[in-house]
Length: 140
Ligand SMILES: Nc1ncnc2c1ncn2[C@@H]1O[C@H](COP(=O)(O)OP(=O)(O)O)[C@@H](O)[C@H]1O
Ligand SMILES: [Mg+2]
Image 1: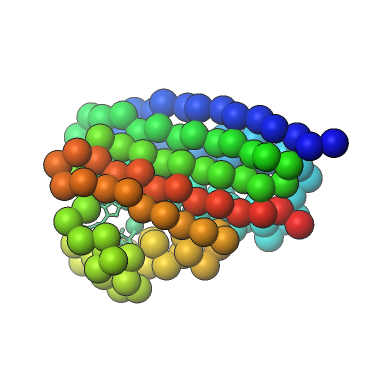
Image 2: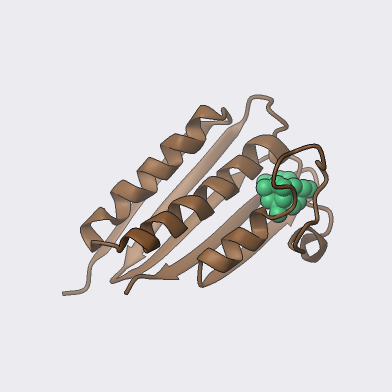
């Protein structure tokens, strides 16, 4: 039987909500009985996108981060969006090691992690308006 489901969560842009987002996506895909590695990959990708919204989108100022989860059968779609700073040049930003905050740990590898752990990563962004990251992963 084809399963369809959708959940949307709106969070304040606080670092503590990165963990919330990880647990929310884990709970969302629990009925699909993911493998341990699928679970780890997906949680990590979501946490990278949420962290980016908080630290780059809003630079730790108050704002709204939206996490939208949906599945069709075993295909998961996750969208993380913010109304923050936006990205000037998306292809540059997605290059491994590219960062506008070189002082941070593991700098510049967030999008690379998302691309390695998910089947598809699409970024929609406009400078000054915000960013949406849409990621897809088919569970085995
Ligand atoms: N939600 C976002 N809003 C604004 N800029 C972003 C966002 N997500 C990513 N970026 C930009 O893309 C760059 C690369 O992101 P990433 O690969 O996660 O590396 P890092 O977070 O270590 O800088 C960031 O340095 C930032 O300039
Ligand atoms: Mg990052």
